[in-house]
Image 1 (spheres, helix red, strand yellow):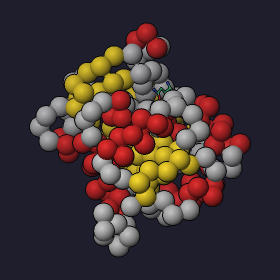
Image 2 (cartoon, helix red, strand yellow):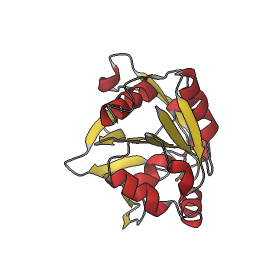
Image 3 (cartoon, protein in one colour):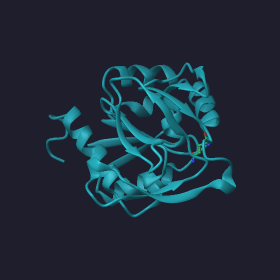
Image 4 (tube, helix red, strand yellow):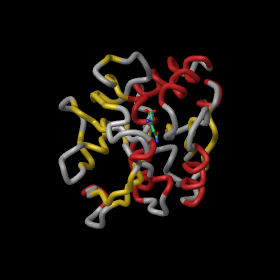
Length: 199
Ligand code: GLN
């Protein structure tokens, strides 16, 4: 199994390290040709406007968008989730798609309002996940085909899945807890039952 990690800007190194700890072959994706042979794509946190601009400059929007339509599993964390969302801050955003959700960026405030909180994520078991929220978005509404994976105590949605596309408002790659990455790898394995048989 080979996982591409979009390495244009943001916390891509941390995802690569987390995947390496799980003995997964992770490769940096900067150009369309780097998508060849990857079984899935991780889009890291960072600054979504910058990531989207660089994806446009490097002509990645089209190839990633059609790969997602074809079933490419994607894990988007924070800014990575934002670039997969169809609507952001009340506007339709042309982009790679993947998540039929409406998001609000910087929903908790600015950098100084970053925080950590234990989040219940039922699909990962009963032990809460320690969420690191850095200028994090929230999901304000979801279309019926989107599954909600996690909500804060006040009901705000902070993790979703649509098919094999997973979006998380916080940063599992900044913790030692690898349950979200393992959950994603399971989805990748299901999506590619033949190529990942040896994994
Ligand atoms: N606030 C950032 C954005 O809107 C996301 C922050 C993050 O990825 N940690 O792009």
